[in-house]
Image (cartoon, rainbow, N blue to C red; front, side, top):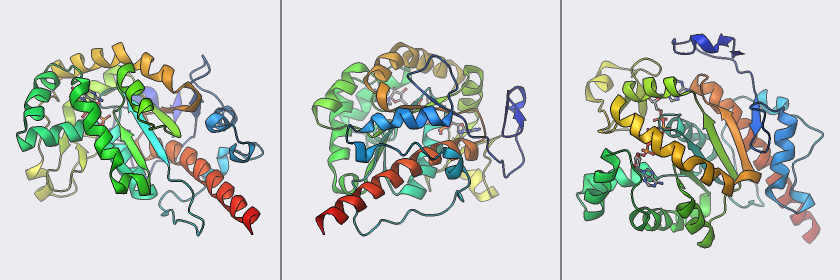
Length: 304
Ligand code: AP5
């Protein structure tokens, strides 16, 4: 299947930039892997029962696709509720990469369970020491460590004021249930779909910049300068052997988590280049935000 002018069979080859996208989105409620953008709009209208909040059906996401990808969203006078988004997918499906692009444009607070755990390890805390034992085996870190850690981050004022983008959490039914009981309800659940052989290649080639926190890939997203290349590090769990264990854990839990968010799930083709993955996500977020701003505007108009 050709996506952004590239055949899937050649997807492991670096592509010239810029890539021009072919938008294709699917909703979780269908057995078909690819649904039309219209069905996505129908799916997203379940976000709220309020008819004022449903996405307008007379427009297609094609319009969103034509928007320049790099503009910055500016808050309107009647500030709508901030967005609350979850992003999920197998190891190396591109969650962190997309979070960089989403936060850059939408100003949401990126809360990554994996990053929070690695920060605990780096700090040498007791939680970090215990977490590392599980992470080295590709297993989920116990809830008594992760649930509190994520809850505290979500309750901080920046997350509350600007909205949040929760990365790699929840990863089990118990985490999803705990989050719900704590009152954290997302507006949208993004699932990145990437074939398994691509995931292994992405893990093995991933490198991190300890100074900026930016994610690189030796082949697909190489460092811009020699200076950056010299300081790149590799994660302790980024080996072929460990990613297979992480994948197994992912497969054991993903369906249970998805079952909690069926009505707000959007599935994204994660195997195209990162700019094209972002274009798909951006279209959905822009639509959601626009609908929200329209609603807050109409509420303000009613008050006058
Ligand atoms: P975590 O750090 O969350 O790891 P993960 O889920 O395995 O995901 P990754 O961070 O490996 O990948 P990613 O999807 O962010 O991909 P990225 O954008 O970097 O968790 C680590 C561990 O912590 C877990 O195994 C577990 O033990 C524990 N843990 C975490 N959350 C937990 C929870 N909720 N409960 C309990 N335990 C928990 O991209 C990967 C590479 O691909 C990069 O090199 C990137 O440049 C490249 N790339 C990205 N997109 C593209 C693209 N479109 N085309 C080509 N290359 C691309």
